[in-house]
Image (cartoon, rainbow, N blue to C red; front, side, top):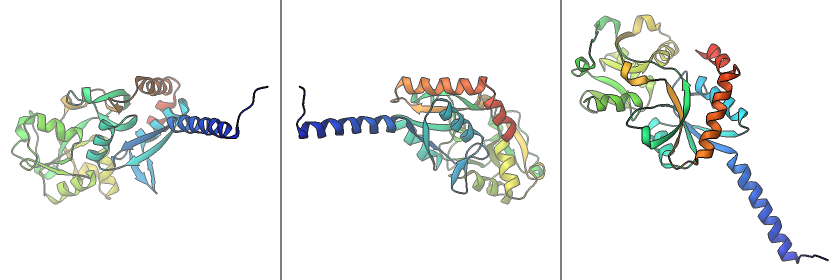
Length: 252
């Protein structure tokens, strides 16, 4: 008759317990983002927003949980880029970033503009015309990175900060001439400040070459392909079954 010594039994049970814990841990994702309303932002201590709710719907579809953390964009970007299996959103997909991440799919459509004060009456036919002006950007975000590739320089004609709402205040106070921001994000921050965006914001230039299909979900390149594909299928499913459209109607 088969029998186990007490020490062997303890070791076996510990092994099973360890395996179960590892499995549970694998089913929970670390997820990083920034304060970028209305797509992702913190309210009453919880990360919310359109993109966040899309992620939660995807996680529910693939039977996973998520640990959401909001932080300055440069930190979130570096954390996801250099880590294994850390999800980042809402991230722009550019040639500069293409090989640094594994791309899950589009979480939201988007359009960036260079905004100015309506009183300034600044309108550009070409991006090059904006170079003599001071532009508010967020450190390492897609707008700032794009402008740098076009010859703009931080500390010269780019004023970099860590918060989008700070840039709106800079524009209102005349501390910068222009602000690169998404249409929904700019309107949201203006209203949050108690302003009418029609009276405080004017579109000086449409960044057509920047946005592509929209903002993405992505993992660092060290992430297993199986995990990327799992979330990719989950995202595709909620776009087919009506969940995604319902969230768009709610938020956008």
